[in-house]
Image 1 (spheres, rainbow, N blue to C red):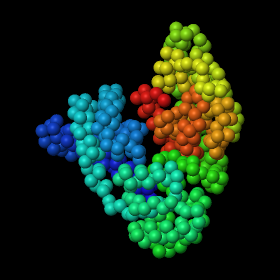
Image 2: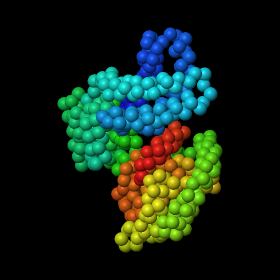
Image 3: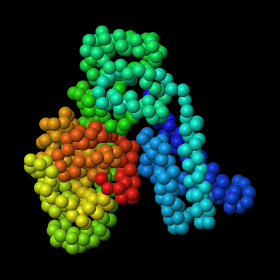
Image 4: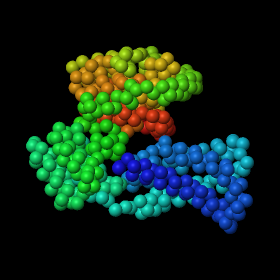
Length: 452
């Protein structure tokens, strides 16, 4: 239900932005020529601007303006839109000044960007919240634990969903107690939607009762699916052997078309990116040698698909290479060099891995590969950690986009557990659209030079 609602909101935002772009063009021409544009004048401009509209929407998508947790919906719309519009302006300059278009409205572009920024802010800040207001349906949440608490807080505090939790039932030890609590909550609140943690054994014992409620018009929603839809990650507390079996087809199933095209596209991008990146190699070499006179590259073993060891190449950013053998302290003794700090912030240190993609050790998109020494520890401390090895690791990863506290050069079990929840989301939902989103968002992060 939340997934459908989120998809509708995203499509509505896209449609509203597109209308805003067209309206801004009409308004720009009206101000520029002192009257509403004639049909001929509008038709002269729309072919070239239509191409820009498509590029603008792509930039907005890559910047996260259509995400469920987008800053647009968090109240920081102005700054986000202004940053995107600056990029759009630069794209417009390049397009109209260098591309062979029928009309080159150079004088109109600057005015258009200002007007469209104002129009989009009004649409996003004022109009969108008003037109998307709907009556919220009462619901009951059944389950316990931190993940269930996160669902309750997000739904009831954000106001972005078509329901509100009128009651939270914590299942009892005896199934009779759980049934009585759910029945009483339904009677008291009149709720017809029940979100239940079906992976909780106490709730699972009450499934026959939940099944009976369907015939009285109740809708039963699996809490793990709602969590996934809301947070774009898998709740590890709700993952078990049954979940892995149910979703193993996505990772191991026969997907020749997807896997074949992904490999082909990855090869093309890696080959082009690898060749272009050669321009930077001499500068990186000189910078590293002037900094500490150490080697330019570093090679490390990482764990790939099905636990196979692969060797990846990176520009050296630390004073040494301990291969993740951190000892009793659990923290590396090496330090990040001055040049290494810049290489990491700009992600230049990852460029040699294009050659790993060409070799087939890595994919362009997938969970980032981990050091064998750390994998050995995490397999013991984190349930189902090895499930991230069901697919080939990647140069770009879902966790690198959304997981804010990436563990680096130390043993960090809790942060790695959070990271795993994003990796499992990718494994379950991997597709061309998800891969495209990861690539675009990663490029957006690179442009903003936001370090890990």
